[in-house]
Image (cartoon, rainbow, N blue to C red):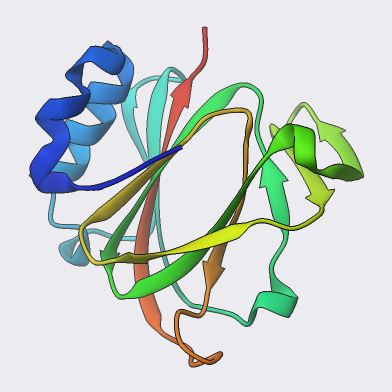
Length: 152
């Protein structure tokens, strides 16, 4: 897992062309002016989904992981807590769904607060729980972009 601000994307150019393309996409767009939905960057290799929502209490969160795609999660507006843990530390709650590329798990982890302009890169071993209220279950309005980067 990597957590940083958009101003530092040049530090991550060595992670591969696809991840770097995802970061550049995040840097050059104003997501407050874009509609919710899916945006193709490089076909099925790299695509982004923009969504608007209110954060939720931790009790409503779900631990998830992916196998086919790396998540580059970006908070464009607002702030939220994102939980993380290693896949080896969790137990399977719901078997992997290959069509949706998601598996739900149970366990515990740590949390970071992702504020505006923060990106989090989550690799297949990085179990995560996004969309959690940052402060005492106070609902925050968030514009979030999740860029899916295909794993080879």
